Amino acid sequence: MKSIWGEDCMDFKPERWISAEGRLKHEPSYKFPAFNVGPRTCLGKEMSFSQMKMLALTIICHYHVELVEGHHVLPYGSVLFKMKNGMKVKLTKHAE
Image (tube, rainbow, N blue to C red; front, side, top):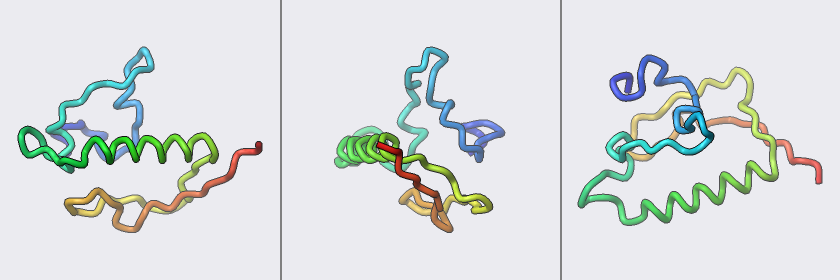
């Protein structure tokens, strides 16, 4: 939403969540509606964050990830966060 993230809201910018010192920036929970906020917060929120971090770390440590050229990434309007046409990437295993 432009009202929350600004004019470049559709651009993939991981630096939005990283401070000048290289630390994660805190963003209020109400900006991420997937897990709700307040007394109705999803019970599985923390577990899903832990699993997401472990998966991301495993992929980053073992593979080079590159978005497939020409593939358009569009969000799908749903309660679950997913891409309309998927998110096609090319994984290349790091040399060991």
